[in-house]
Image (cartoon, rainbow, N blue to C red; front, side, top):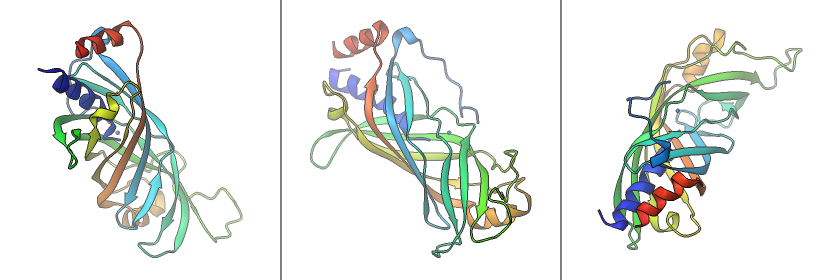
Length: 243
């Protein structure tokens, strides 16, 4: 395998973990040997759009940590809790503020293939999937005088949860920028997933499922600011790839 293809395979394996965002891994694989693999971290900004209402939910920036030996991929992406508004369908009518968490995320695994952009630049074509559950932590209605600013329409014990669901995503990475002396990345890994019906949400369960649950919800993981790990093992693998 020539240098270009070897570097493409290595970087593509690392980046495919960014395709999100996510219960147990869908399939078992051997753990990577830290002495024969390379790690890389990215800043990850993740947004999902609820299909029924077309409202975005923006998760706070987090760190995507990945490790690869150019064949096996391991990585973690744990999204912080997000806050958003709950709308009545596509109408501009805000019913409540709510907080949502992605829980029990699996490792992200995927495949990569070399590609070429329309302007002739080398790219990495990514496909990946991740499994996770969705939890509604709070729903606080607006314009309702309940006598308490802490009114929460769902149980506060964390029981308002969906069954596991899987997001399948794909994207294209500029390989030359990532392999530069000062590595760079500005890529969007996008796809869709289904929000299963929520359970154990109290009297509000039916309303949540009517407004939120359903197919064709979009997911976008924006990865930037790549940082290769340092140390003897990482340096040795990079030297081997370059040689």
